Amino acid sequence: MIKQILFTLSLFFIFLNATTVQTDKLLYDYDNGDSNITVNFSDMNGTATDWIGIYPSGSSYEFENVVAWKWTKGQIEGAISFNLLNAGNYDVRAFFKNSLTKRAEYTFSIIGEPAIIPDVNLTTTKVTYLNTDIVPVTFQYMQGNTSDWIGIYPIGSNYEFKNVITYKQTDGDINGTINFENLPVGEYDIRAFFNNSLSKEASTSITITADPSYHDVNLTTPKPSYLNTDTVTVSFQYMQGNSSDWIGVYPAGASYNFENVVSYKQTSGDINGSIDFNDLPVGEYDIRAFFNNSLSKEASISITVIADPDYHEVTLELDKNGYAQNELIYVKYNYMQGNKTDWIGIYPAGASYEFNNVIDWGYLNGSTSGEISLGGFPANTQLKGSTAMPALAPGEYEVRAFFKNSLSTIKVKSFTITEQNVTSTIYEEAKQNISPNWQHISGPYPPQYIVQEMVRLKANWINNTTNTSEYTLNFDAKNTTQKVLELDVGGAGRWTPHFNIGVIVQTTDGERRMLWDSFLNHYQVSANIQGHVLSFPTYIELQNGTKNNQKHFRVNVDKYLKILEPNNKVISISSFFATGGDLDNIKLSSH
Image 1 (cartoon, rainbow, N blue to C red):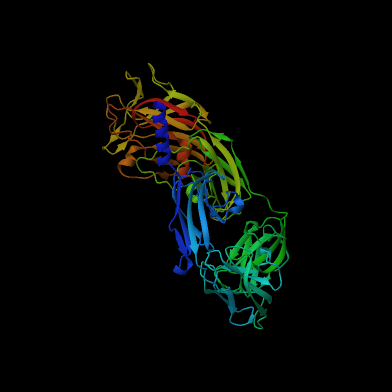
Image 2: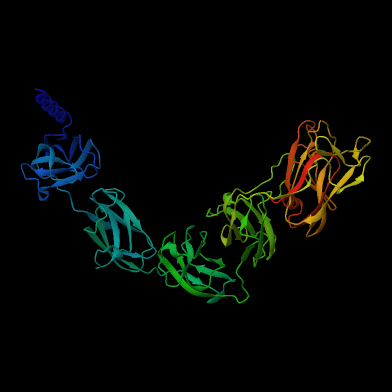
């Protein structure tokens, strides 16, 4: 009894999920204007190779009996349309997975006779045209496919597409007119084709003769051979005057595919004129003229480019291949062009050349060789108040050189930023006493050790406007490798009035006193130079609010030098100085 119930249920579910096919009509009649068969289907398998076929009614399932078929494209249910067939009785059948095992079937009939479709007709307004004329081709009774097309062939040539002089699609129009322009002198067959095929539906012939007032395009250069440093001036005559007429430089003998173009320029709608090409590589070239963004050559001239014996390829040299996050990237360059807008920039490795990918950059200001530092503060930074010290994130980068404000790279050099341990030299940590290297320059009190394990430097005010105190911490030896100044300020329970801190630096342009002063922030004063003294606002407050709040101050001396003296460079740091404050852990660090 249980087996019988289960069998009955299984039949019930099979019935619920049975595949179905059905046409939208049982009877189609040409005389009533029927032209399409719509087949609705459901509960297909859902694979891409499920298919629906139409067979003569009662015929076997061999594929040779199929009169029309289509894939279901993986749809489980939907509708498919077929063109109306000849009069007769038919079965529409559903199949799964490219098989010939029928899953569903429906029978329908067709009566009447299809309307007679006139033959395709092509006409032109005349049989002979000038090569400057527009040739209008009128067509009738095309199929109406978007890929129906009309092509122009040399008269008598076979229908292979390689013989087509030019062609246009009819865009699904059954009747209409299309225009052909700039046909070369010759005799032609104009041929009509359906649906991207090469089976001709109609043809008509025309002849193109030379316009006596027409001039062939002419290209000339002053000479046949150039150095790779020369400007190649190409003069042109009798272009069409389209804004998209263009002239391209190709390797000699290369095909007209645009991927072969070495360089190109549009003629800006000029009929006669000249254009210049610069920096062509050594080689032999064809300079070719084209109309209206086409790849149909109108004229050509050949040149040779040879190496300039005085020419040197641009070189880029880094001081090392790998850097820590906070280091400057020093780039030596040579053989740049010497334009004021030649420039060098840092990009993420592999990034496209769009300028929004540039991390840091600088102009070379007319120099052909020299050194530039990158990875510091952006060019022309005005330091007022809080400015974080920049650093490149760990990763792969490229230094790229460019001429004349362009985005066409001339040279590329790769480097890496990695996380590296910071090394430091401590000059004052105030553990039970202070360094003996302190020098009391001026002011009423010498440097003092305080129980909070800090060194106390007291400011001395005259008329509440001028601090006359000055203290120097001399280093045992000039530090040539560590250029990041670090120290702790405040937190000893005392409010410290206006003071500054700084270092004495040996640079390629001589000695500099570089100081940082929160007083500049209070009055919105930007970084400035007075003689050999370089003054900077501080990115954190070092005076107000430090009574019970110790702050850590950290600056890359070399990066700050570049803000006011971009062509200068730190060689060594010899001492620290201050005009006041409770200070601790004064040190120089590697990065």
